[in-house]
Image (tube, rainbow, N blue to C red; front, side, top):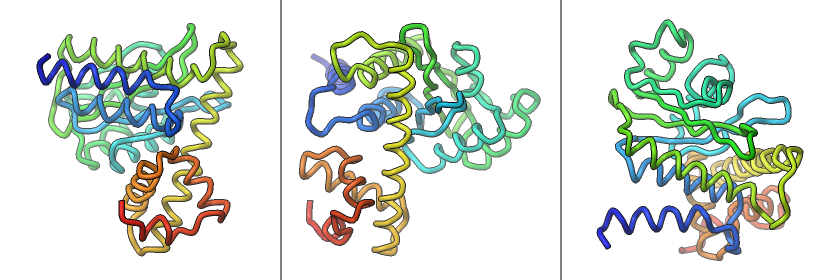
Amino acid sequence: MTTREQQLTEAFVALSDTLGMNVDPLVLLGRLVHHSVALTSLDAAGVMLANSRGGLRSAITTEHAAELTEIWQAETRQGPCIDAFTTCSPVHAPDLASQKDRWPDFVPLARAAGYESAHALPLHHSGQTIGALNLLAHRPTALTDADNLLLRALADVATTAVLSWDRQPLRPEDITTRTQVALAGKAVFDTASGMLAATADITPAQGAVRLHAYADHHHLRPTDVADQLVRRTLDPHVVLTERT
C-alpha cells in the first residue's frame, strides 16, 4: 500500500468511527476538516451547520481565520457556504478577486484574512441539507476532478457518521436535533477554551489545543472536558499543567 493509499484509508476509517469512547460529532467534523486539508492542496477548512432557524453557523475550523470567514458569511449572508447550502450544489471560486460582484461584502473580508480561493460543498442526508463544508486556499486554487470526488466522499461519510449515533432510521426532526447538539457542543467548547485562555493568559486557540491534548490523553470527548470546565467540576489548572 502506498503512502497516499494509507492516508486515504486512515481518513475514511477515522471518519466512519462512531463507536470510540472519545468520539462525538465535533470530533468527527474535526477529522473531516483536517483530512480535507491534509489530502488536498487547500490551506484551511471548516464546517457550517444549519441552526433551528435555518441559518448557518460555524461549527469547527482548522484555523481561526477560517472561522472568521464563516462568521462573515453568516452575517453578510454571502459566500460559497451560503450558496452551497441554499442551492444544495457545490460552489467554486478559484480566484476570489474575480468574485467581487457576486459577493461584494464577503470577498474583501476573506481576502483580508489571507484567502484568495474559496470553495464549498453542501452537507446533506436523506434529501435534507444540514450545512456546508468550507474550503479555503491562500493562493488562487482550482480543485481537480479527483479533489472534488475525494472531498465529496469524505463529506458524505462524515455527515452520515455524525447523524448515525444509533441504528434507528433518522427522521427529519432527528437530523435537525442532532445538528443543534453539535452547535451547542461548539459553544461549550469555545467557552471552555476561553476559560483556559483567561486562566493561563494565552489565546483561545491555544486554550483549545490544551483542551484537545488533555482529552486525547485521557481518552475523553473534548466536549465532555469542556462541559466539566464550564460546570466547574474540573479545575482549569489541571488541564493546563498536566504533561501530555
